[in-house]
Image (tube, rainbow, N blue to C red; front, side, top):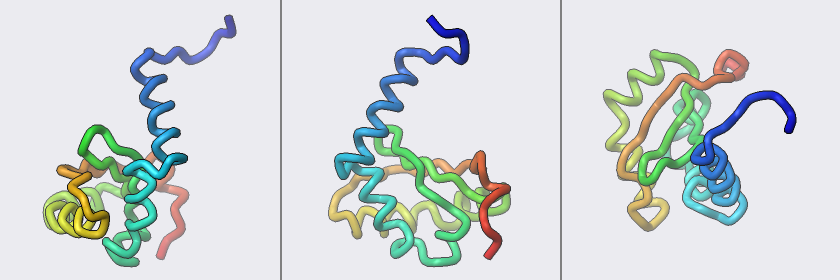
Length: 108
């Protein structure tokens, strides 16, 4: 067995499920497709949906300022618009986090 990073069974299965959801038109794929139209170009340039954990959407953002602003002022609005666009209550909460590759995002 090769040495390296180990994963828990839960993490492994979670990764498989997320990959399947993206390939099968699951909720995250539908959200990614709708995202730019729902949030507009300014937010879309600094925030990207990355995965679903149950009914919570996880969104990577450019920096802590964006995280704080979106959390404080836009969460409810984004949830309402996403669910309306998707025609179902798929998102009940949003977790914003500074993206791991945020430093590489193109400045707009």
